[in-house]
Amino acid sequence: MAEHNAILGPWFIFQANGHPERRWCQPDAMIVNIRTGLITLVEIKLRHTSLAWWQLRHLYTPVIRTLFPAPNWEIAMVEIVRWFDPNIAFPERFKMLPDLTKVTSQGFHVHIRGSS
Image: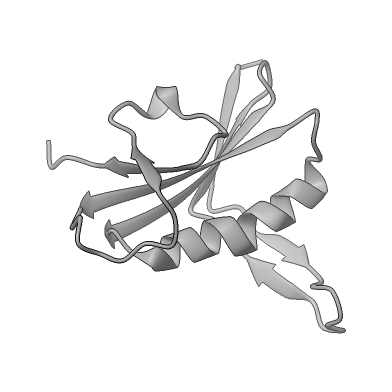
């Protein structure tokens, strides 16, 4: 079995607290490292945007955390972008991540995908 399993566009159904109807969500990718217990949630955007932060922090992470509880699993978040504008307002400090294999569960990460 592979150490990392990448799932592209997985669909999850969930029911939010206090809401009777079910909802769906779909991160762009989910990378599961079975050996370390790290799940990396990935949101891909053309441009760096706070929408990616909101989706990862407030939608996907709580849903995934329900399925993969701590302490056995940790969740990392990374926004992959083509264009990065440092002047875009962002809700929290983030770390630039030149190497996707170096992602951690500490904080929010942004990776700029080059044109090559």
